Picture 1: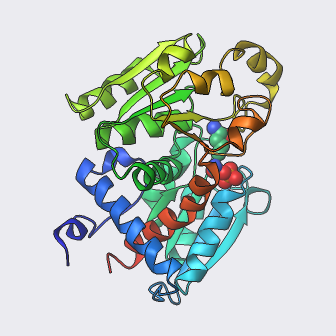
Picture 2 (picture 1 turned 180 degrees about the horizontal axis):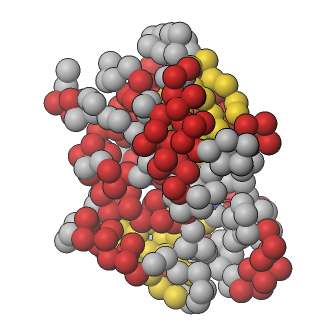
Length: 318
Ligand code: CP
Ligand code: NVA
């Protein structure tokens, strides 16, 4: 076993990348890139044969659902979809009891929930590995697929700068953490009221040490992108915030990723978006479909990263 792969033995859950060391995060990316090459060559081994992934969804999904289900099937396993309207987690039955039951029948759980504490409780009570498939607070699978895309494109991550334009939300929070762990500079440009918590940014900066800067600029998107190799955006209205839609769209004016903003970035910059995109709102068609966009490579990497992650958690490094 290569030394880097040894770092990936004995992983229990994947809730927030802060539970891993920076070396483990980087080793996981390398593992996912190597497994992606195997997949492209048609050489994936059935390492999850007879294993079942339970997917719990309190919120809608396209990418997360498809990528986890396809990843399991490609490794010889099976995935079952548990929709909130059927299982009523925390309503029909307590989170703890759902965890206990699903953990006795399935080998791994992926959950997309509103409250972070729901995913935390699943990990505490299920007895099987739990993967955070997005909460109001975090989206670590997304952040890992994003930095994987950056690593593949530039051949490195440390020393680069990622500018997140828009809401200081779950995706921004996970990206700030993973950038800090990989020695990548992170800057959030957002309107007032939509900042990331100072305590989170300070924690990320402490992890980055003097390897990277973790910053926030309130109110100046152009300044944020001037030195950035990666421009990132996400919806201004996350799932669960639909009632605030009109107000948010007004308050995020000036934070659209469009040709003018892209022109303020270095020429080699790439554009990422976790999707789904609201075209014409946080990003324009011209940028999303333009030569600097890597959004669909990024979406595909959800499959490659999560297939590798599930294998690591259930079967261990191969
Ligand atoms: N980016 C992402 O998580 O997409 P879905 O909401 O479609 O799963
Ligand atoms: N911030 C968005 C991400 C969607 C994948 C949301 O939570 O809705």
